[in-house]
Amino acid sequence: MNLKKQFTEKIITIDGPAGSGKSTIAKLLARELGFNYIDTGAMYRIITLLALENNIDPEDETKILALAQQSSLELENSPADESRYTIVRLNGKDVTNEIRSKEVGAAVSIVSRLSGIRKYLVKLQRELSKHGNAVLEGRDTGSVVCPDATLKVFLTASFQERIKRRDLQNKQKGHLIEKQAIKKEISSRDRIDSSRKDSPLIIPENAVVIDTTNMSIKEVADKIKRFYYERI
Ligand code: DC
Image (tube, helix red, strand yellow):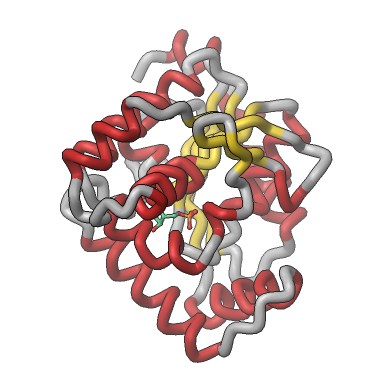
């Protein structure tokens, strides 16, 4: 481990399964620490949208990669707006809402399995975080993207709690989705994320594991900040 690098490039990675509280916590920490928030899931979603908009089979790595390399992907932080914290642009067009569509949600787990796409995005993610002062959120940010991060966090929560949270999020967004469908979606995501050949969801080496089931958002954020301040 490179201590000098750790000190000069302040990076926190937050990984964990769907519904474990990653996004809420990562945004809160980024806002409080004045760090850049890097939503790596949004990047997999943009590439998926790109494939769908161009009628490319989400398994066709060669075509998707070629198109991605010719496209411009932009992520801009707008901390004042919680629901649009990361404004996402594809070839100059704001696609912040489109990347959260049902269609993208259904195809993103296929696209995120493609090794060439992962390699391409990991390079971009490292580029975005190379100056430090960043919170990265995803599934492999501590294990693959930034294994030398100042602090690596792995968030978990019980299956029931994760369903409850996703249900609440959907209701707040005005999306009417049956609890049964949420259950199915979360267990399918768990299975795909953890069994993927390339960069499966794992607890990164030396990561701090926090079970958020019975914790408030503030308690989780405070705990992470305590760990972070101990390290710097
Ligand atoms: O966090 P999210 O739901 O926006 O992620 C979308 C998809 O991308 C999800 O299927 C997991 C995948 N993903 C990934 O494979 N690696 C990451 N670093 C982030 C997300």
